[in-house]
Length: 222
Image (tube, rainbow, N blue to C red; front, side):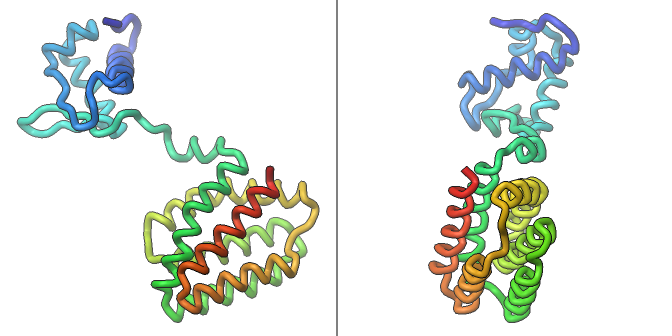
């Protein structure tokens, strides 16, 4: 059994526990052995085991239940979301947008209100006017797509969309600069068709149009 060799002990103990969880020593939902069992296995004291468990609980891997013990609630500790997004390449960002915006378009067609539809129309009109500077065009495009995600009435989808926006904005600007053109009439028409599908409450068409637009963007970026 690997043991802790260097300080800080609690950090090292937490990493060893996490390695064992990743390796399958305890499946999802399993109860961990008690402190008296884990402490000698890790080569640390019981107080260090308690601190290691607190660390992994804070990372969402373990949870303590009063009077029941400590249980595995995740099989790995995810990296901070901001770190994952920051290092994502253009293709990865667009693929994430496909997942988010395709379903959002479908839901928006079913759930949008008259005021939300008016907001979409205003955002699309503004997008059509912003064709002289790449940054302004990307921001107007983002505002239009966000108006559709808002109309889906799903707080997780809008949270995901917003968390991707800084990296997506950067990727879009870089891609359009490399391509050397943007804001064509055909592109604006594609967005108008998406808006019309949402207006007509045609969820299948809205999802298909959203996906087709983003897939074409992904192919153009590769």
